[in-house]
Image: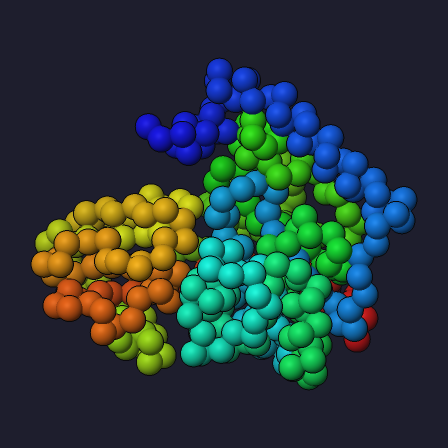
Length: 337
């Protein structure tokens, strides 16, 4: 078992490793409390932006569903005629430059998740390690925007926010301890803006009141067609059943993807990869007949690189329940126009 796997287990179950790391967690907790105090005393301040910002984040490390939540928010806002853009750090890219994302961008330049958000939603997206600078650059390029969504950035307190959407998966708060003794990046709400809680799981996984999201696979489409904008076909599963199919996933929680594929009746040969895997070389044998990929991985793989392998892109259908939509509508009405 790797160190990362041992940590993940300790974060959920406790044990000697989590106990040994508790002093480091106390130091980490002290540092973030001091930083929060500086903002409360006005010694540090959030910057000002001309439009409201919604931050989508989570209290724990690892993928809890921030990007699907951001895409769901964009769909809801677009349905209401609200022009919204997205800012992100662009984790996993090979530079820290401030960049505006377009269809010609690569995942290496802007990050896999920001590129996926732009391709799936058509929304304007900017990436930068300084999210305030990214927000200003995006607003300068797209002055018609009336709202910004920050994909992650809950702990980026220089970024002003009017609403936070906190995303939790089935891990909840883990063992309830701060990094590195546990998965928590913060122990509680550390800023005063209102928040909505969304559970990317079948049931609430913390004591916080919130809303549920339905998560299921929408279907699959061949990689070349996906790059041309074709939608996933739910009937594609029929042609993939009855034989072993390799499934690759560069996710923080790859087993979640494999489990959902098996629920479709597929005989999956799992190939877990590191989160944000760059696909600089193909991770499967050259004679592999068929491969299933997530959309997050597909943005790093062009069809001309495949050889004879047939690659299917599997799309996720992620939809918050109606109560979340109503709560979001109420929160939006309270935002400045």
